[in-house]
Length: 349
Image (cartoon, rainbow, N blue to C red):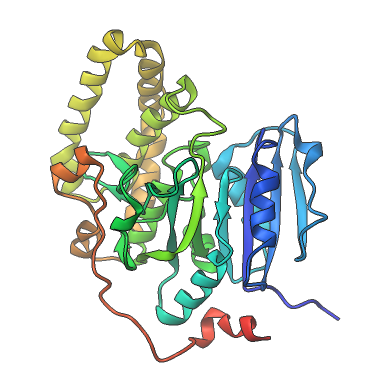
């Protein structure tokens, strides 16, 4: 007898995560919603042999990579092996509230036709503060997690945002696969922003869920403001703008992006990060022909109207520099009950 596929496959990409992964898995075992399985990638980390899934009361398996293939490729690898109707991405340093998956399953019933959802992320060190409430993007090429380090009490209801932070995000698997998943050349950083923008170009929307909550350590593995993070953020930020911004915004804001890069180079000696920033810019521009070819393919497949896409971006410069969230009222909500195509009926089996 063939086992029925779960509603949700939870994907965890682990690299040197031994200090956090057991707590992450314990939080998954504590979920009140049980129609899910778990796939954990040992992403070439020295502590991979310590991954123990025996205490999980749901189907679970470890996938092993002999080397660190990055967050983007790691999640793509797990997604190809997943059986769930939905993919729930969870960082190993993110610890889900017991009702995290139930809040999501309830949202699938409420929101007809939505294929992307984000979680409310709280600082693990102080859960009264937000680690972020959705990803936001400016046509200047800048992205940020909304309202980070601001009171969690600011977030009181579901809202529409540009895209989810992939530390704790939900994607319908067929939609994730249809757009090609994460851009694997990114390795890590900005890969969720770029995917969010491509999903927007494909006509998808993202709902940020107030009730789906996780506590997040943030940059626990790669290190905040490390040379590693500075390099990938700088390089991938350039690629994201080049790949996803449609004309005429692309042509209008490209000079401003180039001016930003010049400023980064000029300020490098002052900030002490000149070598890594210059290397990131150099590597980004070396790949310019390949990235522009990717851009042509992405833009040719655009389904969303330009106005619909551009309305998902953040145009207020005050919000950019204050890291404010740019949450919008949800345009349409289905309260009639489960939508057959979502697979929500699994939850009642």
